[in-house]
Image (cartoon, rainbow, N blue to C red):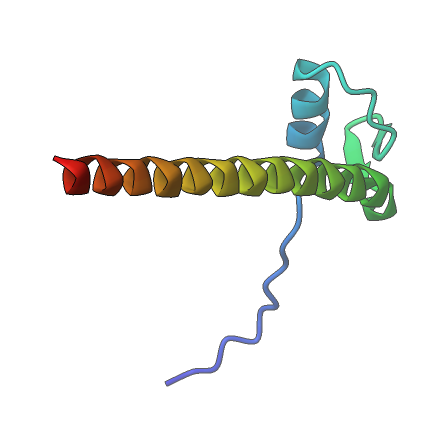
Length: 88
């Protein structure tokens, strides 16, 4: 059994990042292009990621509030049904 000594790298493909940003109309400054050589400045992702997390948190909080309101309504309707059937 031989040991694999080739390192595995992970990351984004600069061309994919540029195409995705362009497709959503986002002017992303983190892609560098020097002729045929493309590169990514990963630090440029941070503000976008932070903003995305903030937006997701707002959506989560709204969904939780809606869920709580729906549960209150379910509880109210259940109680009303119990009261209605007890009175019959």
